[in-house]
Image (cartoon, rainbow, N blue to C red; front, side):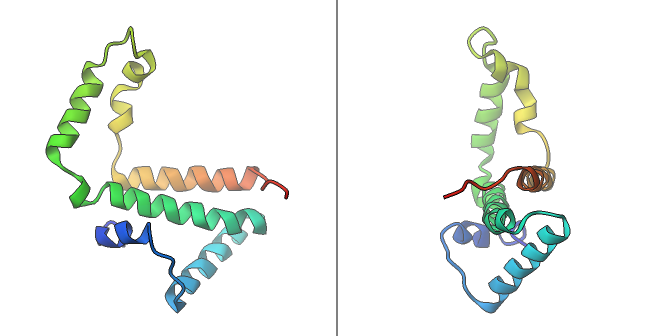
Length: 124
């Protein structure tokens, strides 16, 4: 939905929703994380990270953020970076810009969920 309505993604970065649809979304996310074996405390904190990732990815890939000139300049700069001064950047090359928004979103979700399963929350 955020990719279809990128304005929602941009506004969601600043909003603090509290309505019934938002509460249902959180309940659903917590249930799915619980089914996946994520500890309750990690799931509670993880919901925030998962939503941030979804909204930031959708906002980044919205039409408003996709100026072809900006994209061309970034791509050109990465392709022309000197390997002697930026060896890791030169080696990563096009991987930095590869993948569809949906692929990157899915990979990010997998990364976050796997991390939630194996990263304990800090104690007070």
